[in-house]
Amino acid sequence: MEVIIQPTREKAIELSARIIAKQVRNKPDSVLGLATGRTMEPLYDILADMHKNEGLDFSLCRSFNLDEYVGIPGDNKYSYRWYMNHWLFSRINIDIRNTHVPNGVAKDLGAECAAYDALIARLGGIDMQLLGLGEIGHIGFNEPLSSLRSRTREKALTPHTFAQNSPLFDKPEDMPKRALTMGIGTILESRQCLMVVTGEKKADILARSVEGPVTSMVSASALQLHPSAIVVVDEGAASKLTHTDYYRWIFENEPEWQEFR
Ligand code: GLP
Image 1 (cartoon, rainbow, N blue to C red):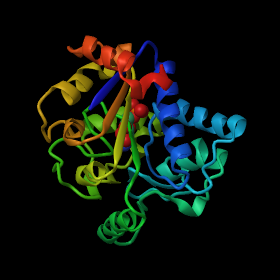
Image 2: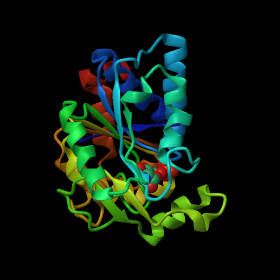
Image 3: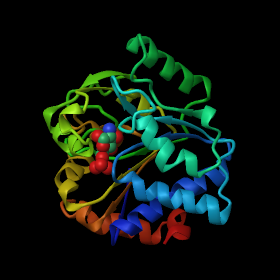
């Protein structure tokens, strides 16, 4: 795992967008794993700008989103399908038929989830998986006690997650209490993971995820098992980490980061 600390939220988001852009340039038919949440909105703004102003080409990319609410159809503005169309897909040249978000209104949710994992495998696996961090330590909607080998499946959401996300709904009580989410096992199979975390509010849970023990109580800690995980944070989110001098040294000195400094 590598932790990259940036001075501001804006810089952390910009660096993350540049890492994704590099992936797309190096492999134009990349399979991208995508995430939702407030953190990702400015990141998708930058990718849309890169497409418009620098010709960043997504035409051959395929994408898989991490999760979706159960019971909300894709044309509903609270669905993650709607979020992705709005924030990213409608602003870049990806072929919408090559974008995948779990279907939260499928008749058979179990079959939907199994088919989702099978399709990821059929398309060669995810090259780069973008991740946010929930305040409870989840990646996707892998709530505490999610098996570290879990596959895409239906999960009941914790009251904490409900409290974190329900203010985004006009009527908070309308937020579903269940979701479909890629499993931690599914996420760990991606070739590279890129987690983006900003804000002091997440400092504690970030420290537990990165420097704490690997535990199903904090599903993001499973990234410690991934051979190629990058965690990009701002100073606020980094404020409870202990080995920051080392993380900063790596970013300042390792050749792989030269072009990003
Ligand atoms: C939701 C999503 C997560 C995301 C998290 C963080 O719970 N299911 O994938 O990481 O939100 O959201 P935010 O960026 O708004 O803090």
